[in-house]
Length: 171
Ligand SMILES: Cc1cc2nc3c(=O)[nH]c(=O)nc-3n(C[C@H](O)[C@H](O)[C@H](O)COP(=O)(O)O)c2cc1C
Image (cartoon, rainbow, N blue to C red; front, side):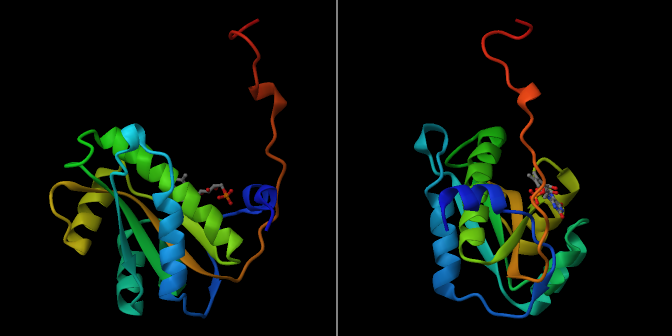
């Protein structure tokens, strides 16, 4: 796919048809995450892959807006490491850059995904830390639900020239 198509034609996919995603594909997706920029190049991320139907169904109950996980082929929890990057906020920024890279390569692979927010919601953080048995210094930032697309959302025009300012505000 052309880079422009990857960027402008990616949409969140919440309906999936059946199919397995190979380990090679999962690692390609995570590799894209690992090539994201990060503050001071700390690369303070970890990736937890869930593939079992039982665990995906459990996650779909844990995340308040994650019902689609029940029919997903896989989920990837992207976490920050507070031992590498002590600031939760920088972990959130680093992991968000990784997540966006992952969403883009997933689209390029003709798979579909949606980003499920975790940080800074405390109740989701607590629930996911418990589910994944995360140590205290591992901070869950976002969960990605992935599968074979069973919907084709439209691509609405989001370009808003009025949001662009050249020079200072108000000039
Ligand atoms: C931080 C963040 C949290 C999100 N959380 C959820 C979520 O919990 N459930 C969901 O279905 N979509 C979630 N989304 C996806 C957004 O709803 C989606 O990106 C937005 O509606 C724009 O649509 P698009 O991704 O198709 O361009 C989240 C996106 C971001 C960036």
